[in-house]
Length: 201
Ligand SMILES: [Zn+2]
Image (cartoon, rainbow, N blue to C red; front, side):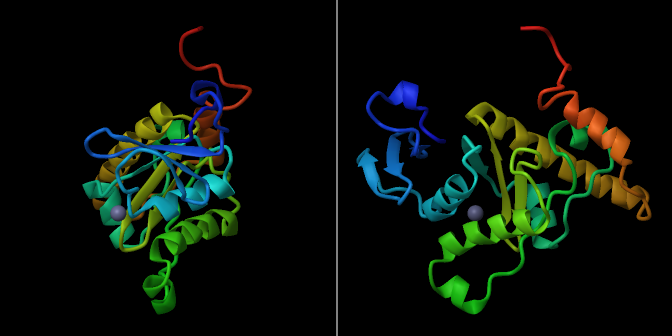
């Protein structure tokens, strides 16, 4: 996750805070240089750094190989919006990246994975916090949010949606996506300036 400048004292917001499997914090800058911690950064770090650099609105990223979302990534099939559970979290289709070519795999593979995600979003005119996920072809989902809590919630929602989509497509292979009105209604009642869903704070 991006280190909030208020909590980090002297360090700027252009930092990443990463927890390893044993919860040992690692802090690096946006060039991937280690600033704090004794462990080696994750090998996926260049993917994450690329996303933080290109989308300043992203506060945290979650990468999983969760079964159903990864199944769609491996099938190279975007996750279409067939219901309001999807629309509550993602404002439209969750895209799939193009395949990396041989050179992109052999050299700077993790960085090129990040670039493929950025390309997929930009080519489809997607705003990062409106559709906070992308499926990396033949690999798995990268999911994000403005905060760590949001990123985690989106990753859990993505897996549930992928599972439901598989059932929906089995039950009705000709199903159409929900209409734009219903998609907008569900997404914008929870997100953005016009949000009104939930309890008052
Ligand atoms: Zn992975």
